[in-house]
Image (cartoon, rainbow, N blue to C red):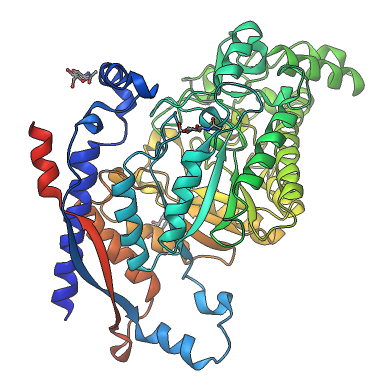
Length: 549
Ligand SMILES: *[C@@H]1O[C@H](CO)[C@@H](O)[C@H](O)[C@H]1NC(C)=O
Ligand SMILES: *[C@@H]1O[C@H](CO)[C@@H](O)[C@H](O)[C@H]1NC(C)=O
Ligand SMILES: CC(=O)N[C@H]1CO[C@H](CO)[C@@H](O)[C@@H]1O
């Protein structure tokens, strides 16, 4: 029996993988401008760029029936049957058995609102449902929905995607992204970029005047710099329009809404030029746009130290430098330990907390009369964690050091707004970090976890490394870390793409899912096969030939 299941799953995997890898040829088609350009030419009549490899004309591939038995653990099954009443989810899930989600591709919807790889995604959703997953996550981009004109939203692509998730019987966690991305290229709305060209101070700015153009500076939250509206008013319009456009999915399919809080969606300053964990430096403070400086000046005057408001620290290292290369973050007696250091770091981190509070309380009030949970992402800034000043965290906006807990305030912010924390990095371990970075993802994760427990905040774990880069025992590590503590709510595995369904990866993912559902597998708890499921999958062979034309 087991062998049959194995064969069926392998077959399905292979087909899905072919659908993604061959038809889709990865997800980052926008990377290749010339391809996109060609496609734009050939589909000009639609006014919509479509990747060249998807433009190929072909007849619908033959559909073929594939029977897959649904796997159910007898142990779990019994629990649901014997209770009489529906099981209490907390008990049913049990400790160490968090609900599992998988992220859909970042560019699942094109910038002209059509679902890319629709057939592959539909087949993928069915496979996830069969595996027994709770649901999926996908990002909705500000730059796609409110692309051309302020206040004009087009949700059609995302509504279509939500429908597919609903039809697959999965839950949906939606990330509302108020930031842009370089890879794949997803910019901010065009009308925002046009304003930014004239008023670059709407962006975060570093000491040497470099602008970070992938999200708005938190200093414009309450300034009417966007065609007479404040950033908060614009975010509010977006959230309200989202709520009404997705009302058919609210509470049934959509269970969570993740609010983008900054660069890469994270609650942080863009202190490091890339999100890469390979960056060896401490990063830089981002408080040099006009509006942040105005605020700093006012704050310094009000607190009786006008001289401290003339600019940010002048003795902080630059992006790629180490903490001791200048005096601000120095061990034993750096400026960070002086009254000025405390003044600046308190102000800088409070700005970030206030920004998070504005957005999370706005979202909580908008979604108050629904059952969805609002959450936000807190990054795991783990480099240089083991030096006294925790410089990377400080430039990112967390006033955390060996003598001050900066994450209590963060957990308090989420507790106050009844929000969950999205916490990436469950796949990391100290021993895989370069020793010269004094990094400790494990200690930082455990510090944040403790803060969550102290404030009764639940968190949703994520992996930080892309699925293709997960080390061999990555899944074991995730499983182990999910079983720790009481604050874990669920886990979102990032993310579906060409690699996800490769036979090698998908089979270890399947193992991971099974092992999570069956922490201790006893003899009479071996899986039984209760139901037969039928799944429609396109036969890939035809497509293969199409590619050669
Ligand atoms: C983009 O695609 C074209 C056509 O497939 C290819 O010739 C070119 O080398 C690609 N460019 C890059 C940068 O990958
Ligand atoms: C939204 O985008 C879709 C797909 O491009 C298009 O068909 C539709 O007309 C657009 N809706 C509005 C209201 O512009
Ligand atoms: C970040 C973190 O705590 N990672 C831990 C996850 O669990 C493994 C054990 O399997 C540890 O080695 C990691 O350090």
